[in-house]
Image (tube, rainbow, N blue to C red; front, side):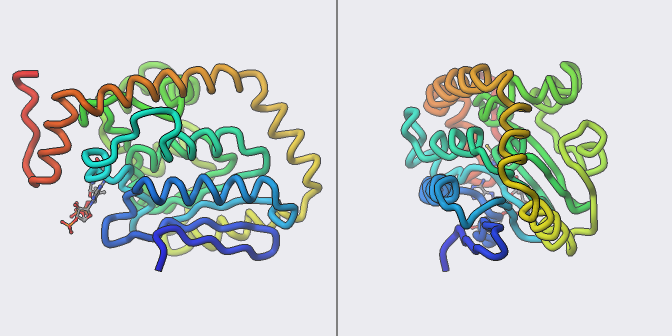
Length: 254
Ligand code: COA
């Protein structure tokens, strides 16, 4: 079975991250599939709303770390950046249902979703600094805007997880529900949206986002270039090597 599943029903395209044995970590091939699913959904009049979901125990452990070592995203054509461009510019409503850990891009992709529902076991984290890299997805712009500079500095510099209730408080999620219900709750919300006039939804989303669309694009491109460079540097190589060898990284000489 594929690691990315798509299912269209009632005008809602559900994209499921389905690599549970590796904690839904995302490989280049999976980013390519999700980027393509969004590109197709943009053009397909039968799709009015998109919903991303994972499993009730794990949304995503972020980028596949072995991929970071073997196939690092080296330029803007890389699948991860393609996916981020597509989700950040997608014109129709996008929802996400998050339960369990949402690490790295598992959290930053949510900044580009319109509605986010979380299981009470959801744990959001952006541990880019702990991996010797920098944040992506325009999170260095959008996270401070969302939660204020100091709280943003805490989540982006310390990289520690914050739970669903804290995410609700800062505005990252819309509602917290039991983990076993999050996918079905989000699906019901997606169906409600799909019954509304699409042109009104599209204009509302466009008007809310247009003020900083260019800024988001620019920030994302700059982060992406730095991210690609830092992936090759000693701190990141030590962090990824440590993860693969199941040991603590040693940054003391870096
Ligand atoms: N990339 C590749 N493999 C990953 C992965 C990742 N990001 N996250 C988890 N896995 C793999 C583990 O290596 C392990 O594989 P194995 O069974 O072959 O040894 C398997 O998934 C289970 O992971 P494990 O760490 O044992 O699960 P857990 O329930 O104890 O912890 C997480 C879950 C998500 C908290 C933890 O796996 C984690 O922190 N992962 C790394 C997150 C990360 O740093 N992502 C990069 C963000 S940019």
